[in-house]
Image 1 (cartoon, rainbow over the protein chains, first blue to last red):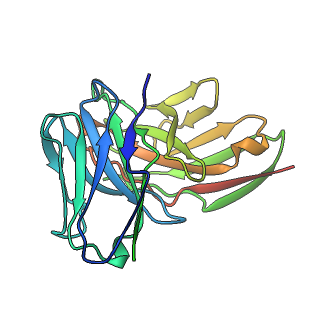
Image 2: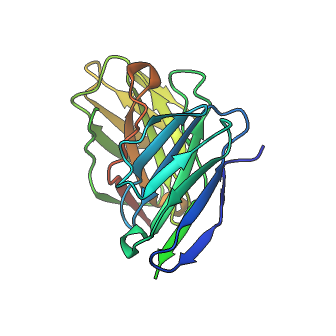
Length: 115
Length: 112
């Protein structure tokens, strides 16, 4: 079946612009995660949803970052007034959440470049 | 949250068995141990998961001692295509650990 889909695959934007990154999780997966990954580093946790509820947003760097999942399926990560330091790979993952050991399934990510 | 510590890098030759050990001294009672593999330009991919003793699947084995303060991922007879970064994570929703934390991982390089 289809895996986690992220769009766009690449995004180049100018400093100060807003961007919206989309994640379409595996159908039926109740849990959705956003991570950010710098080159040569492990994924850095940003936020987590259980159904439509944002359970943890402690990893969001500042108030320019926000995320939503209004219907418990597709999620959008929005970065307002982008800065060059926001340049990174943004990865979404979903899990079935149906059992205590549900693994994460990752998408291929969105590469964001802020010029 | 249980923190994990892994070697930063390892080299091996094709056909050898590779063992990567992860330390997680503060693992909680309900935490599971999960390993992911990541190739360049791809997202991490689930390899194996366990709670205690030994788990084996078609890709790898996972050894967990009785105290669960560490775990060892074993890759039998590695090939060049096993060159990747391997991450060890601990946590489980039932223990309240929804925030799965990735460390820097172990960069495995398989040489011909």
